[in-house]
Length: 83
Image (cartoon, rainbow, N blue to C red; front, side, top):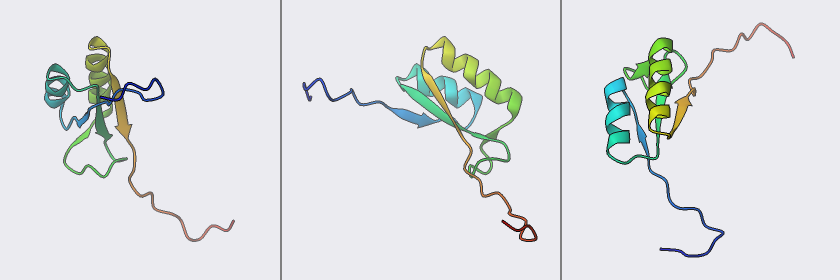
């Protein structure tokens, strides 16, 4: 293990595809979890609805951990506009 104060400890982040998985990964030692937002993520089939994200945030808060919301879907651009 590195003892230099400049180095932060390693963190473990897992995917939370469902609310059940969010809780399980935290129970098993994850430092943080990421979830996909419905319609805004490339996590097809594993996106959480708005109310589920709220629940996931509350679950993560109860463990005093962090949550990351994936919003990485391509957004269609209207080619008729000019810049």
